[in-house]
Length: 180
Image (cartoon, rainbow, N blue to C red; front, side, top):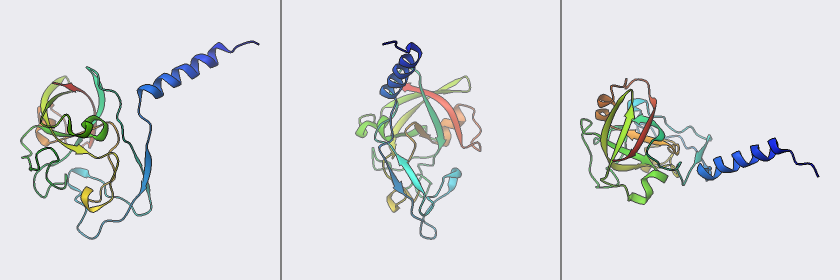
């Protein structure tokens, strides 16, 4: 029997990528927010009624140069981050470099109050992990009627964006990060 080595190599590459990555864990159906219940500060999305949103219980592996998407979030009271931060049940000033990590990277709170180093635009900044950017749930009151986070999100305060010299109006930026 003749073996197609290219096909075998392609399957091996796909298997390795799948094993190193993170597959979706499910979907949730969006619900429309009651009036005034979805804060769209910093360009945050609100769930759309009937739309399905992908959920994740995992995130890509962390290494010394983990690729991620940086998003902007307000951790202040009445900010688009919703309630108090998960790690310390407090709100944080937008001038403080703090972040929320996707569920897999948040690791059940094991990174709480630890610092990560974020790099982009030729600059780096240390920021404290204070919250989870929930990749498993969303479209409800607890999540400010916003969709679940993708599995590769570092949701950061304005202070992080400013330290990296990034335009806060762009919405998302490719970055790398590592535990500090």
